[in-house]
Image 1: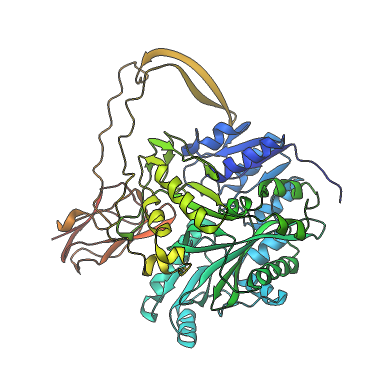
Image 2 (image 1 turned 90 degrees about the vertical axis):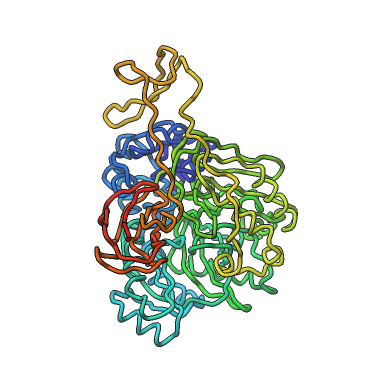
Length: 592
């Protein structure tokens, strides 16, 4: 296969991962092209790229999942490669094929491998074919609640309903009895459709106290493979990872090597190349294939810090037809020390609720120091939108051993400043300081079932929105010409704000924040604690409800949240319907 160096790549994504790819490409002398929605017009990834093209729209479906708009940007920019990042189209085989058919390099695996491994049902079949043990579950899609109930009766509860084309805990619901199957199935399909564009689901047995261990691998187009490291991702809430470590330890003699070998076998079985991750569930000395993520994962930097390997650079080289630069023996020899990665999300962890917290980041000061790295798609003044994932950034820390890495991560988290939105930092600190975590006694269920967050304080509570900025004389702005973005500078009279008439802009009234998932503190005014979209109303006017009963379902940052009544009584008014957009503090239901 001839090598064709890449000269210009388009990143079909946003946020932290787009910034990550732009930086790696720039270091390699490769020009970069960003795409953006209306809400991301001045986002960090747009500011850093060499070129940028407007996709239009606000939601993911209107912008980053708009295939034709992205293909049009590729044609206009003349990009010879496309990096999909993670999420959005990163595991969409049709998108990968469309890129390849344009004569453009898709910086990821071939479409057929994505189809087989990206579909969690067929990937289980592939794992069996490759010799990997799998968790008991269906090897076909399920389409009715009765099928799920039959599985639960045969294998026992709890069971997990999972998005077949999903990942990262999106579209996954744990069911503890037959009575809640229909509700969980509907919710899983809605989340899967919203985040991945497809709503197929399957079912598997939900293990009682497992660890989540995964293997980072890379293959080239010449049939060479290496597994870079294992990662333990067991500290989770809502099946989404909070803390990730490399390597995974305390699994017994030879288990890590066996996992690595099994991951490579699974990749070979489907003709996989480029970066990918095979996820396993580990419990009591045994491991089971869970799924394969046919893309670069959020937690890839924690493998980078213990090996010194730039995985995005390797992706770009593999996509250009180059061979892997190292053998398995060379990669293994490079592993050194211990890495920890913390996902810092815009969520309020008070009371263990982890409520989404969209809004403007009025101040962001990353921590620094030896062995500390911070990857982010935001800077001070940037906005966290309800329409996208709530990841602010990733703190990646290296230490000569695990205790050193934990201590350094605690120090770095305590130094970090994030104002304007709530973050998961208080919960991260509670995890790292807990003796169970230090002793490696935690599991994927530990955060929700053992860790006590009932009295947790939020040290980075939102501050003012920063309206009173210093006066500026020079102003930078952006214009679009035929859909292509250009940065320009203009000089204006010194003033804090202007509108077209030249009059001062009136300060916008602030909305009072809701008091919790039910809001209203028992007043009967059920409010929402965050901006989002109502996806389902669960009560009717005249219905009697109990305190703590769900009255509607709110989707924010691609996750569904039940809004609860804080008072027992009768529903006298419903102020919303499915599809309505609401803001923090809005009243949705009135109870008398």
